[in-house]
Length: 157
Image (cartoon, rainbow, N blue to C red; front, side):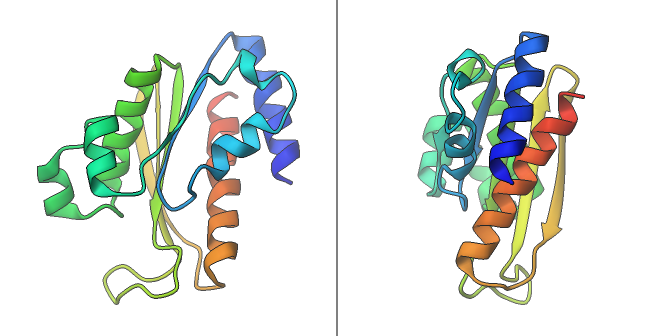
């Protein structure tokens, strides 16, 4: 399924002349890997960012320490900053950011399976939170990867 999404993304981005980047935490580079699994992806994808730690989010993407302190890494406020930072650093037309609780574990406030997403493009930044449930770490990461790819595809029209 991710291969079909990635192929559609490549076709649509290429037809628009757009480039895409990723800023990933809980997915650990799986969104970038899905995109680059498709031959010809270098036409639309130059680089991505795996920022698993808070310091990486700050150093590589310019996420504010104050935002991290106030909201935590798994928050729409942080993924919005991740997406803006990745788009600027990669000089891309579109950036997707992902941060979540893959598990095992979590808390009452931030349960396992909660993933925050943001998309930054020419029209600004939008974000959302999805509760994927607690099907296990691998399943949450796979679901988050598919959802991020779907967001990119929708943004490309």
